[in-house]
Amino acid sequence: MPIRVTQGMLNNQLLRNINTNLNRINVHQNQLSTGRTINKASDNPVGISFSLRYRSELSANDQFESNIDTAISWLEFTDTMLNQATSVMQRTRELAVNASNGTNPQAALDAIKSEVEQLYSQMVTIGNSEFNGKYVFNGQLTDKPPYKESTAGTDAIDTGEIKFDVGAGVRVTANITGDKVFGMPDDPNAPGTNDNIFVIMKDMVKALESGNFDGIQKSLGRLDKQNDVFLEARADVGARLNRIELAQQRLQDISINLQTLQSKTEDADVSEVITNLKTDENVYQASLSVGAKIISATLVDFIR
Image (cartoon, rainbow, N blue to C red; front, side, top):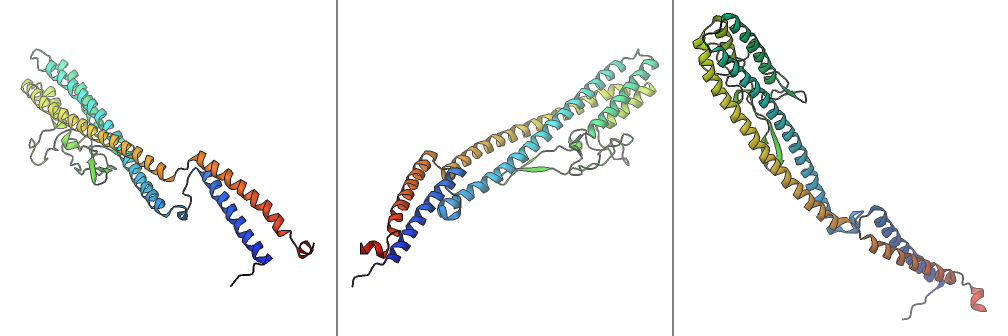
């Protein structure tokens, strides 16, 4: 059965087609202004799922890189403090060598003692070093100084580790506790149980004060052992830095790869979009021109 086509049907169909053309122009204008082919989920339902996953992975990657930056800064600061502690240690050893000469008068020993006391204070200051307001050698108790000048060497310090996530399921320790640098704290109830740099320097001061050359000689050997501890700590810090820097390079490579995949999924081909936009504008203008002629037709026009 033939369908009668009325003027109203023609008008409605024309309007629908013009709106369709206008919507296509709007889509391409959005793509051109944003530089992306996906501006809402309906633009590409499959592509949006990949895009969201890439964005999520990039966000996690950025957080890992931020953690790595913090860990590297922490370790580099720790290495600087260890270098300063080593310098204090070496100067203390030089003084011990000079003082061990049995021909030194007590006045010379007293002068050396005064310098060793200053070096002891400097070593305590290094032990209480702060990075961004956090004490680096007191484990997880970063809000409390690990050492007091009057009791350094017997102060109990925290040995907790501060760890950073540098990858999915990968954690690294960024801090090094004071017991692994300056030595285990001595037990006040059992003096001499543990040997640490603070106890060694205190004993050296006592030996210098009393003119005990045998005690000064013993300090040399104890300082050498503690120097080995310092070197081991610096080697440990260096090894961690190397590992974290490798992880940082890996994250940078992953980030570039994810950004490339995201770009392929989301970014618009500007030349193609402009071509399509101009084509749609021409079609839209043509539809308006033709539509004007159709809509203008009236019963009087047909009678003519």
